[in-house]
Amino acid sequence: MTHRFVPFAAPLAAPLAAALLLAGCSLVPDFALPDPPVPAAWPDGPAYRSPPTPSSSMAVSATAPAGADPARSADAIGWREVMRDPKLQKLIETALANNRDLRVAMLNVQSAEADYRAQRGDLFPTISGSGSASWSRVPAATTSAGSALGKTAGVESRSYSAGIGFTSYELDLFGRVRSLTEQAFEQYLGYDETRRSTQISLVAQVATGYLTLLADRSLLELTRQTLDSQNASYQLTRKSFDAGNATELTLRQAQTSVDSARANLALYTRQVAQDENALALLLGQPLPPEIAAGASLDAQSVLTDLPAGLPSSVLLRRPDVMAAEHNLRAANANIGAARAAFFPSLTLTARAGTAAAGIQSLFAPGSSNWSFAPSLSIPIFSAGVNEANLDLAKVRKDIQVATYEKTVQTAFREVADALAARSTYDDQIAAQQSLVDAYARSYQLSEMRFRSGADNYLTTLDAQRSLYSAQQTLISLKAARLENLVTLYKVLGGGWQ
Image (cartoon, rainbow, N blue to C red; front, side):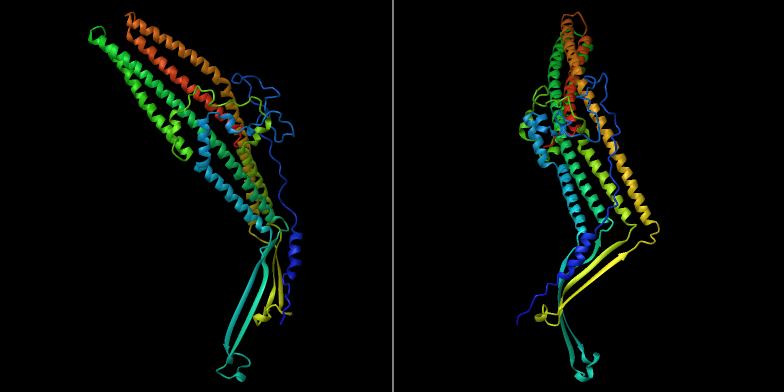
């Protein structure tokens, strides 16, 4: 026997098409990005190399016309172009592959993307197929024909059914579901910008940690040299004291200098070990052996300076600023969902299939069945819940507006500080180098006068301490200048590729 298949999905086509076509308006407010609450140009004054010019003032605007950025954007400059030291590049590559904070940021992006896809699925009906079979037996006495069948007989029945359908699909007449979908999408984009910000920060942290390690190693080596020199002076002074040519006061003064250097040696030994531990945490694994002999701070290949001329739009392309913008857009979309709660909602439930008493006749002619059940809900009284939710959505948007503006202000301040530091460190280092040279000559002359008996040892001790302190400051300034270049790369939203 041949059975004709009845396309039981056909009755669903009309209500499903209507559901997709009637999805109507959106109640999301028109979005306008706030004007950045910062000056139109970077600060001008003695701390900066030169007054701002039209090519380098980097005025901040919410929109930048196409082709208005002749200079290369800072966020297009990859970190490998800024940090030229091969050992530093190797450290950064290791950190990007193993750092747990960056890994969490990437997983947060994946989580937000999955949330967005799940929310987007509510725009479409969830269609599922079903099939069922049932067998039953009841005593004949409980049926209307029981007397005819006898008291001990029973009535058996079987039924089979198959079908497809959807349940409680919300027809998005006023854009509530689409507003929530837009909100989820903007939140996903915000997490992606946060991940990019974490990546840029990680590059800067590794570079800063590496420079700190180099600086502390330089201070440790300087302290060793100073301790050796002071030990030699102490031994000479002790011989003079034993020979009766020096007082005990001179001997003890020489000893204080040695003990101070020994204490600093322990200090910098500890700091170097802690710097290595901090770097290992950023890398997510122990330091590679070749880092044991790092580059010098004076090496010209450690870092390359960023260009002076930067476009105005680079500030608004910082990942943290863009993340704040996406969060603001998400809050704006949520207002549309809150507004839709004041309007009726229409949900659809539909099913089409077949049913028969025998499985062999399940798809026979005349076995089809279907149902379509729209449901309309009209809000009448909610005790102020809908109004409160709308007010809450508006307040949250205002919070995001303030957060966005504060993020732009913070970005402006960070860049201005970095530019001021870049413009003044060179002069400070040059002056400090001259001071070190002067103290070195002063120490040399005072030691010669002490050995000739023309002066006491206190003058020599003061000159030695001044030289050591000036040398420490010079090393710290060199490290601070290089770290400022790293900071400038970071606060300008430097390239992360």
